[in-house]
Amino acid sequence: MPPTKLGAGTNIGDRPYWNGTSWTSADIQHALLSAIHSDTETETPVAGDVIIANALAKWSRLAKGVNDKILTMYNDLPAWRDPVGVIHGAELHTGNIIPSADQDFGGYRLKGLKRMTSVPSAADIGTDGLVLYKGTTLGPETWYGGSGDTDTQVASNYEIAYAITIPSGTITLVRRKLAANENVKLALYDDDAAGGEPNTQLINWGTFTGTSGVNDYDVANYDVTAGTYWLGMLSDNFQDRYSTSNPYQRRYKSRAYNLGLESPWPNASDTHDGTYNFYEQLGVAQATISRRLYANVDGTVAYSTLT
Image (cartoon, rainbow, N blue to C red; front, side):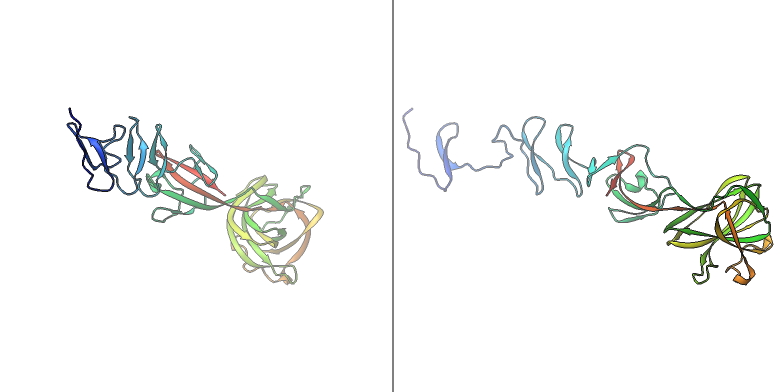
């Protein structure tokens, strides 16, 4: 075949190429993801897409993920997935470690800011939601008060107030050691500060049943600041253990059990000071704040402890 002359191109960027029968020149710009390349898939890109090498070792488009998904490896290929693993440097735990239902729960579902009032379930969280938990957890109690245990005092139908100095925290338990079974009414009074007397009734805890030995009465939680408080008691069979060493301040007054504890405490002129070390204690717990990020991992509620 004799040589032929190739004419000048029409546009800047035109290149010569063999069209199958002859040489010609034309603009040969083309799409990346087109059939011209043997190592690419023929696809139309959309804003937000990512180019990856697919399982066929061809360049292809990975469609953009929806909001809040992250790009990660899944089955040996890049994929948009829900966040799992490490969150804010804290390990994401799974399994049967969901907090008990009686814990204080105040959180927000991040997707829609749904207010939660209980420990979230998988249904509460949804398939792609997160729940932020911020709750108060009380630590173990520290005991304050007397621990005399050499004698027994019998004093039924007396209302008695026992001074105990405690730090800031939450009163969760009242402990008493008895020589016999009893029914007892319990309350907490503040100190009048001026004369060292019980004063305003802060909380009436109600009636409890005790047996011979050490009894821990599970009273309603009550937050206190550091100071002196008075444990008020009125028993139908007061037989408390005590000693005369290391005495605590005590006030008492004759009063029928069925009448209940007075509020406020009766005037000091109606009481008598005692100097016994009774086995009467207040259990005070310190609160800690816990923050957790809950997620639904394949139907299992899991959480990450945040700092």
